[in-house]
Image (cartoon, rainbow, N blue to C red; front, top):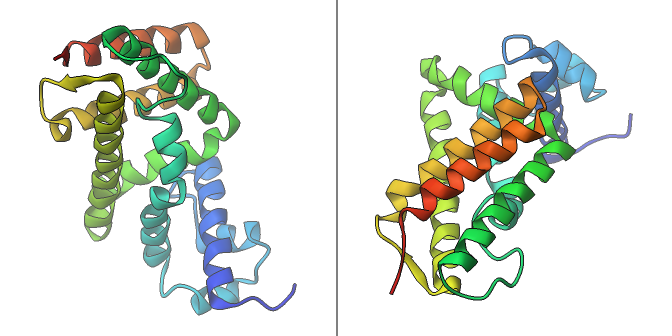
Length: 207
């Protein structure tokens, strides 16, 4: 294996951790398994991370920044098509973007599965709780920004602060993810998206 820098080792181990967690869960993501997936000798692990906990923290820290632009384009109600302005435009854009998220999920379900698994695991392990909380706070911030942009472009406004509504976006994408991972039922996901769009639109008003 070619000699790798510390940054390259870290990146390779983080990516391997995502895949191993998706296949074996967080409990099954041992350093041995992660190194094997990264095609890296176990002895080299500590050149990149002090511990398995440090690696898991790094995975959660990179979960949002690595996909921020994708999330703003695919998860949030921004502009995926030119629907004009007004309430119906906002509805169509929101629908489009949840459907775009679902399409993105289908291309790499393991990554979303790993992220959700880490969030649950972190909540139940004191040494990871703050990092897990920060991961979701970043998701909410991204969602809130997307909601603001969407409203501005459609010429509408939210009747409640986006900081209070943005968790609904993330809860919806988590629900879509869990439904796809457990059933892969497109019809059920379509109903979830329809229900969430209707719920969100109840908070949209036209000036």
